[in-house]
Image (tube, rainbow, N blue to C red; front, side):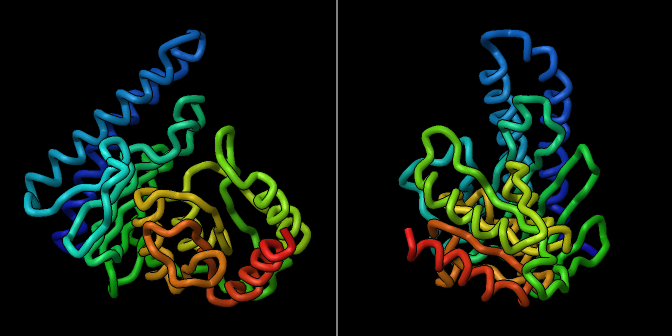
Length: 266
C-alpha cells in the first residue's frame, strides 16, 4: 500500500505528465518550423511545473520547492523539507519527438531524498520509493541486478554536449569502460537512467555536472533497491555534488577504480 505522502506525489506527477503528454502530440507539427519548437517546449515545461506546484501546495503548503524551471543559482538544499524535481526530464528528446522523457519528483529532508516518484507516461511506468520502505515499479518490488562481472554489465551515462566541459575526460572514460563492459547506453534522461539501475535494466550509471533535480528521485530508487550511490571518485554522494556513480553493490568498486584510473592518467 502506498503511503499518503507517496499518493500526494503520484497525483501531482501524473497530473503534470498529462499536460506534457498532450503537448508532446504537437511537437511533430512544429519540427518543420525554423522557430517555435524551443519556445513551445519551454511553455510545456513551465505549465507542467505550475501543475506540480499547485497540486503539492494544496496537500503540503509548508514544504518549499526546488524545481528546474524556477530554480535560481543561489538556491540551496538545507535543513528544511523541500520538493526537488524536474517537470520534464529529457527536454531535448521531447523537442525532437523522441518518446523517452519523464516527470521526476523527490521530497528532500536535511539534504537527503526520503520519498521519490518518477513517471514515464508514454510507457505507463511509475517508479516510487520511500526511505526504508523499498522501491517499486507499478507496485512491483524492485531490486538492482545481481551481475558481478564488469564484462557482463550494461551501463548508462550522459554525454557532454555543445557548451559543456570535460569532453576529453569523458571520451577517455568512455573508451576505457567500453573496453571492459557489455555496452554503454546514452538516452539523455538521468532520472530514468537511475530508475533503470534500480530495476536491474542497467547495472550502473555515471555522469558529471548534473543538478539536484536530475538525480534526487533516482538516487532514492537505487538505494531502496539495494544499490550503491557515490560520487565517481568514491566520496559520499551529495545532491549538489559534481558527479554521480550508481551501481549494484558488486561492480561499484571495480567501476569506480576504472573511472578514477582514467582521471589520474588525464
